[in-house]
Amino acid sequence: MTESQTPSETPYETPYETPYETVVYEVAAEDGVATITLDRPERLNAFNRRMCEEIAEVWDAIKLDDRVRAVVVRGAGDRAFSAGLDVKESFGQPEIVWNHLDPGEFLSPKWREVWKPVVCAVHGICTAGALYFVNEADVVICSEDATFFDSHVTFGMVSAIEPVGLMRRIGLGETLRMALTGNGERVSAETALRIGLVTEIVPREDLFDHAHEIAKGIAAFPAVATQGTVRAIWESLDKPYRAAVQQGLMYTRLGNPVGQAEVERDGPAGGKPRIR
Image (cartoon, rainbow, N blue to C red; front, top):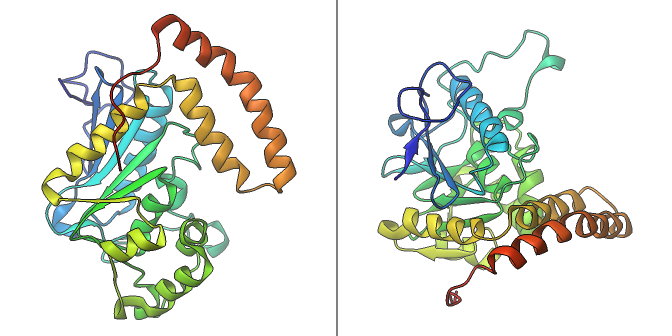
C-alpha cells in the first residue's frame, strides 16, 4: 500500500503540519520507493515559490527517512512534465539582486545532499527550469510524447543555469543548440535518446509504472552501495580526475564492508535481468 505523507494518513512522524499544496509525496514502504508528483497541472506543473519550498521539505524528509531507498519524480496531468518557473507569479526575490536565490537550491537533491537514487519520468512538455529536475536525476526516462526545449532566449532571458547541468549530460554542442534555439526547436523523445538526455523511451501509459519498477529494482540493493555510488559519481564531476579517483576509493573502503555484510546476511537481490 502506498502512503501519502500527510499528518492524517501517515503512521510515522512527520515534521510538517499541513498537506502539501503543489506536490504529492508518497512512500511505498514495502519496496523502498518514494514518489514526488509535481501537482500543478493547470499551470503545466510550473513551479512557484510554494512548490520550491515544498519540494525542499520533501527532499529533507527523504534524506532522513531510512525506508526510502530510491525516488521517482514525475508530473501530474496529460500535457507536461513541467514548464519550468511560473512567470505569472512573483517568486519573491529580495530587493537587492546579490541576495537572489536560485530555485535550483530548493529543487536539487544533490544541492541538499540527498544521495538516494532519483528516477525522473518525463512526459509532454519539459522546458526551461524543468531541466533542473532532469539535470539532477540519476536515471531519466520519457514517453514518446515528450519534448525538451529551453525557452529562455525566446523571451529575452539569458539561459545560464540550466545549461551548466545539461552539458554534463549531453555535451557542449547539443546544450548550445538547445539554449540558442529557444522555442524555435524542440528535442523529440527519439532525439533525446540519441543524444543521451534520456536512457529509455516507453509508452505513455506505462511511463509511471516503469519508472517505479526501475526505482524498485535499485532500492532492492544495499542502500549504502547505491547512495555511495551516487555520491561518488556526482562529486567526481567537481574534481580533477586523480582527486576524484582517490575520493572514490575512500568511499569504497567505507561503504563496501557494510553493503557486503548486508548481501551476505540477506543474499543478493535476485530475479532475471531486464534487457534494455
